[in-house]
Image 1: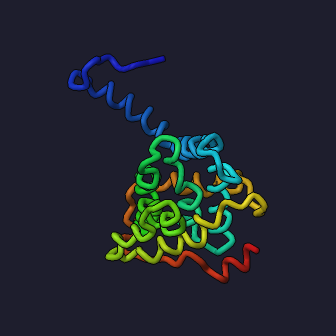
Image 2: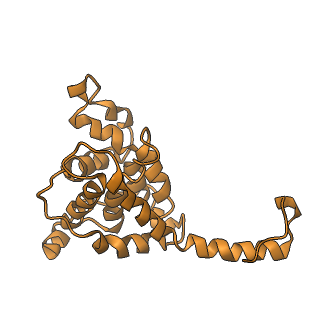
Image 3: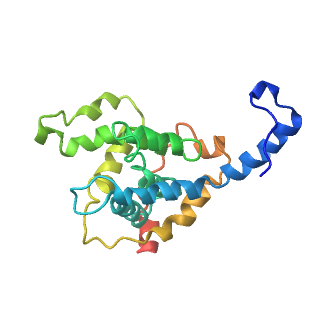
Length: 205
């Protein structure tokens, strides 16, 4: 396999970097596939629940889809826990960093802090602060994360729920990660889109 000539980056020439840029472009174009592989690894993640973390992720996305959520919300619901394997103490931030260049700011922010919002449903039962989410009260997206956790995250541990298959969501993930990163038309800073859409939900039911 062809390789660059240098062992220090400062010694590389135009030929080296044109060659690398081509390879890096090809690599970046496969990001969606690598993210899906990382998601699949959640099948071997944290135990003790009635379903795997992978099943939880799929169920969250299924609920979002059936609620009429748009593409950004559905993909974030699917991928919100992909950091569990490698960043157990800040898995929400990990997932958000992966998603941030490709989804609406509203959805990336919600993903980045959902763990503290999720604590509302259990922290007081183990001597913790269930209202730790209140530190984010000043965010314009606060209520969006409240709703995200109430509707899709904390509810999605049901082994009897009729999940859609992971392959159903593959084209959505690939579409999101094929976007131009940090495109203003995608990021839409400050824009809030409702999590649910009754018209779409009825069409998808």
